[in-house]
Amino acid sequence: MLGNGKRDAASAGSRAVQVAFLVGLLLLWYVATNYWGVSHLLLPEPVQVFWQFVDIIKTGEYIDDLKVTLGELATAFAVSCTTGVTLGYLISRSQYLIRVFEPLFAGIYAIPIILFLPLYVLMFGLGPMSKVALGTTISFFPIVLSTIAGFGYVERTYIVSARSMGASEYQLFRYVLLPAALPVILTGMRMGFTVALLSIIGSETIASLAGLGHRIVHLAEGMDMARMFAYIAFVVAIAAILNTVVSSLEAGGRRR
Image (tube, rainbow, N blue to C red; front, side, top):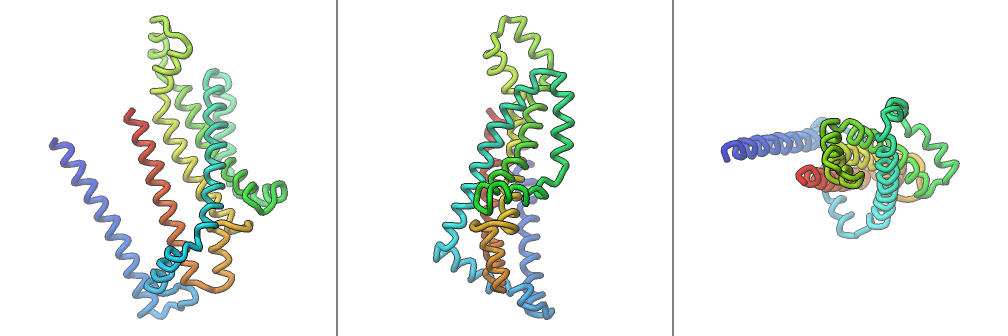
């Protein structure tokens, strides 16, 4: 009980610091735009941005763009999870394949894959498919690498013990390999989800016909800075909510 109390106090302290940081940032923003002479064409007043944010929520104009972005994200993440986990498990069954593919995938993952967006646009057009292809490619690598690490480096003692007790391949997978690998795989999925979200929104700001990123660029081109910042705040809020949900699912999976 005492340990739980200490953890709760530490968590509350961390939250307080985070809230204080955000409040300080907003105050600095307010002072800069109202007293330090920062141009509202570059940085609009936070109160004005707030009311634009409220108007966006009230009118529901964001719904179509949000559907596009979330649809791209869901498709990309589903494909990368399916291919990454399947391929990672197959590779992890052979130490030779691990030695070949693990450094290869890690090296490719180090490349800024966003550079290939023009190629994806040429292949799939400006529509959602190019964003799905980019998001799938970027999120595939942390998922496949975590799956290889999760299944490929399970303690050999556990496997030998299970086989010596007559465990079948299914029982070995279900009761030994999967429980040992799941925490690592979930971490890779969370990382893959995050990079997929960032890459899709980022690519929408570069070349797209719809989506939240496209909306932000459209407002910037029209010099509607207050509404643009309101949409940026909206995207940040959506990203925070999605990451919280994914982190909660990861924590729940670890406890099983």
